[in-house]
View 1 (cartoon, rainbow, N blue to C red):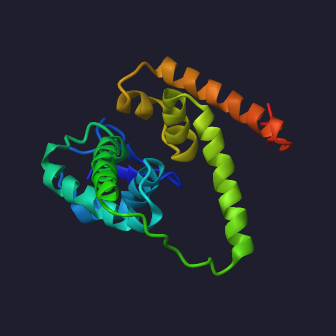
View 2 (view 1 turned 60 degrees about the vertical axis):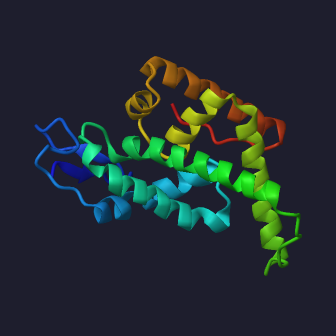
Length: 196
């Protein structure tokens, strides 16, 4: 197969001389895709607003769609670039279905107290801080920031995924990173400065 795993990144790269992520006669199995990219899909779904308790089931739904659409993947792009819009579509359908179900169901308070309240409070505070920062970004900047800085995708992959110019991707990323520094400064956190 014409795919190799980039050290520590989890993104396949073309084998020298091939120029594609998969050759037409190569067979890549659903199990291989799942093993290599289920974590990526899980993180995407979480950012798309899928609740924690439903993530595992929705990841499986995404891979049910992938199974059906696997013959369509021509291998010219990394699997993450192909999986991202599938995950986004499944997440959107799930949110709509859940919203309709919630509208029909009366409110019932749920939940048990967390096992370790102090740890849960720290985690919730950190998540709220990250969510507050992401909410300050405009949607285009947020999407680029999440894909590059949180998912580790490369700029050209994101440009292809979002069907936009690479310079636009990098511009959005620079703005988002500047906003992050300002956000942390305003809250008394000194972000680590990169060495020149």
